[in-house]
Length: 517
Image (cartoon, rainbow, N blue to C red; front, side, top):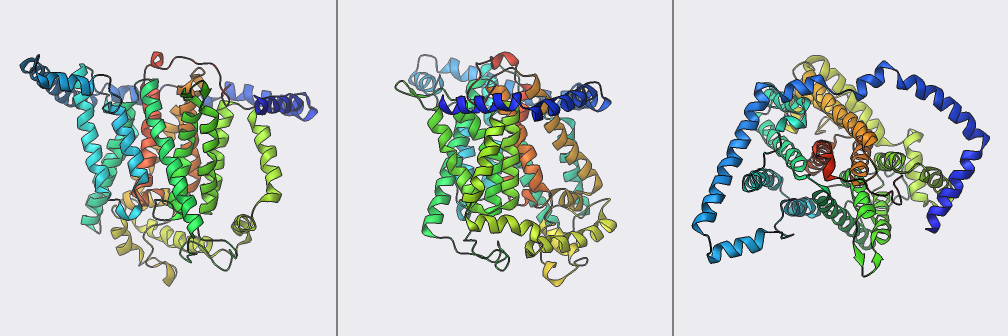
């Protein structure tokens, strides 16, 4: 393809340059040092703690419970089949569920994911996610029972996730608003269940591509909705923008989410996955492959990301795609860097103003966060060991005694994910959540580097990029405060774990494509 030949030519010139020769020599020295370093051995080794956890009595009990439920459901299906043999009921059920795309498990799960992202904020209820998570868990056990297959072991999600869940439950003992903490605990339960269901749904290439396809169209439709908002006009809100430091910045689009930052966080976590589907889909319009056109469609969510005017979102999504291209095809990186440099003179003035506000020191939202963090630091000195309980209710009760200014008394959270986790669940919550997050990132990176060319490797790169990208936002926003973003985060974790646990033969190697080498 023409654009690929341009990338290849630029890559060739770059490799022949003296700068590249110097950088390669330095890189080789560090690579050899890294290859035999203790840190590398710690990162790529197989966790013995995880192996012992999967072989523990607790893990065996969980497996036995899920396996017993699936076995009982399987027995019921066989009994139902015997008593209905040859009847109209059997023919109807066989036609509906044998090879039907609509009634496949991963299709139904993909439909739910798309619906969760597409529901406008005013019509969405977080209880839908809890009901759906429990329902899909039951449906998954039905599928396992009907096919005589063992359910995925919950231990495959990792010991840190189980410990973090236990710490969240234990934090109820220290809650200052028990009812609100129970509400948040139920939302976390839904997130953990969705993580398990997502991991269990990835069994082969077809199941992965089905789910990624629904994510792609959900991202595309939310972007179209954001463009419609911009066309109709979005009111400039002082709640989202410092009007004095951001003169000329228009109203920020938020699509189906509560506010522009929430929508930007969703795009950071889902757009890399949508890109994998666009690149790897095998659909054709007669003899014309659709993949190039679907890749062009990704310009819409990128445009929507710009119109959110979320500075942390811009940095996060750039990092996410940098990681995807780094693992996918490094030859595109120089071309992308050149394109970014050439695009600077054409940036709208509102984007330039928004970018410069990050370093000008005049933006009130940055100062506001500093005031909040000062009060949080004082709060942690008194309650950092045990935490104050889950939810904004407990935070509202306790934080007002530590607020450094009157303007910060009514804030609902600490505007940083890691500090908020420690505020709510104490030092154990911080340790287990960091262990969980870094463990999934480490395993995804190792899995991507060891996988051959194909959709599995590219999808792992996308999950890795999404997780590392959103981790930047973690330091300036409490991303989990908006439940749909929290669900999206655990869905990405579940997809990564599902790809890591799926058998290698279910994802045969494929020829390198436009962005994979």
